[in-house]
Every structure is written in structure tokens, then in C-alpha cells.
Length: 268
Image (cartoon, rainbow, N blue to C red; front, side, top):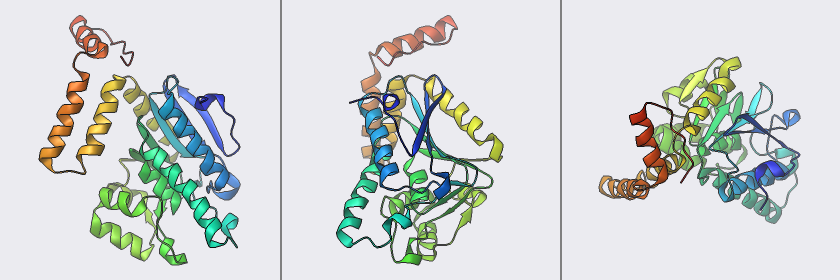
């Protein structure tokens, strides 16, 4: 399988704002970065490639082109007139796209630069956490057109914001702003619009500078343990901890601490 950087894309732009950070920009500004079949397939390709071969990437940022929209969700113009079977076949691609982000072994941060509506909000929620511009707005308005979220939104929103808040937002379809998103746990930080990407890259660089095996195991421990009882979660944590004992990176981290120098982690 080719690495993400070795492939060309029509609806995405890939950049390296830092040596170990990959910036994935959804690039359909004329459609408010709504994902069509092409974009969804390309996102799936990128995240599958990262899971197979990281190519030096240790953290990923997902954002949208321009300053108006992160992603307006699924492109309903493409879906107009679709029969049920075609709709379901396309939706399977959308499901796989979202799953590839949620299952990515690397930390994925959403930089929500504008409107994140419908599937766009679901993509932000599929990431490990999100930062948002103060101008960002969010909504899961699927019930207003006869649907419900279908790429994880009912589950990820309730886990971030709690069941009662999720029900309010899902059943009303009401938009909410960045400050509400921060208060409800949908995003971790709100920034000035012109500072969003720099602050997100700074955090991604900080994560990327840490021991990659430890970062991966920390992610796994949270993801697996949070869906279990406390006792089971503690067992998951210890299993992840034990995998790091004896690694070269742990020895390097201890040596660097004692020698008062930055560590040189290799992921070994």
C-alpha cells in the first residue's frame, strides 16, 4: 500500500506543517467542504494508509479549506434522486471513512475552522479531540430532513456531552456555537480564527515529540477502558503499561531524564 504522501487526491490537500505532523485539509470550498463519494473515498484511503504505514507521521490534524466551513456534511446535491440501494452503497463508504478516523492508531485532532454541520460535526467528533475557531458553529440537523446521524454522531456526541445534552441537540437539530461546544465537551479549546491552525499544530507537535509507543498505548487505554467498568479499565491500562516495559524508548526516556537532555524516541 502506498503511503498517504505518495498518492494524489482531488478533494483533499496534504501538508506537513511540522516534521511529524500531517495536516489533512478537506478541500471542496465551493461546496463548503461537504464530502461526496470522492472525498470520502480519499479520506478512507489516507487513514487506511496511516494505519498501515505512518511514514514518520506521529500526529494528524483534520481541517477544512477556507474560513467558512470545516465540513457541511454529506453532499446532498450528489444524493438528490438517489435510489435506496445506491444511497446505502454510498453510505457504506461514509461509514468506513468515519471508522478509519476513529480507529486510527495515531492521535487525530480536528481543527474546526467554520461550520461543522451534519456529517461534518460527526467527523469532528470522530477525532480524538478538537479545537475550534471562535466563529465555528456546530449542528446535527439530520432529523430536519428525515434522517439521523449515521457515521457515529449519536454515540460520539453522547459520550462527549452526555446523553441528555445529546438528545436535546439530536432531536431539535438546533445549531450551537463554539463556546457551547467548549462548555459541553465537544471541543477542548476555542481560539481566535487566525490562531486556530497554529495552536492546533503546536499541540500536535508536542504530542509528536513524545514516545510514539506510549502515545499509542495511552490512546488505546482510554478508548478501550472507557467502555468498560473501572476494574476492567484498570486491567486494560496495566496491559498497555506492561507493553511499554522493556522498550528502547523507555530506556531512552529514562536516560534522557537523568542526563538532562531531550529524548530521541524511535518508536521501538
